[in-house]
Image (tube, rainbow, N blue to C red; front, side, top):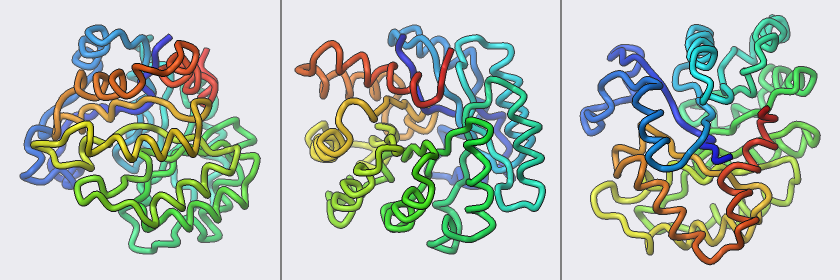
Length: 276
């Protein structure tokens, strides 16, 4: 089974979705399951993990409802306030839905670069394993040191780094991102999503040669057992389309074994998110 481990749905709201600025006008509309299903069918993708784009319980309920009515949505990465005093109660409430596989917080937007090491946030993280929930780490390269400290403090908690932590592909900057990704990869409880890379490159004229060195670093660090494909649809439309993201990885993996390809395209995501 081929799994897209990272994509989003939304009903566009210009106030709530103010992160979509004028340079991203292509995203200023609704993106819902019927449109994604057509893209997935065209590219031989069987199922997906849908990931929160808004920090509200309403968002989590919205995604769970979509998963309930669309069987190709295999799991949801939602949001609750992990810092809240009642965080465990909210986890217990949402975890009754088997489609909830994990949680995410938009850490990249937090003014405190060490947000993930705040005591109330770590308290929330400490509850996740009880409910068999994963955690998606959404960060910029400047947060990698903090991420490394977090995963060390929770060695039994499954973590996944979204978008390779958004390396500076457009500027072709490698350090210290490379060294910190290599350090994170030494933690066996950390996986990584190969997703969102085209939007970190030059949107209008990126080439495989721009992205390949970053893929080389990721595959060398994590191997083929802890990397998974994500389209980052519809955000990928800023620098291409759904097919673009698939072709990029098909080209990169062309000389890999069929076993390793199968791991990357689905087995690893199914393992990480405990898909049925």
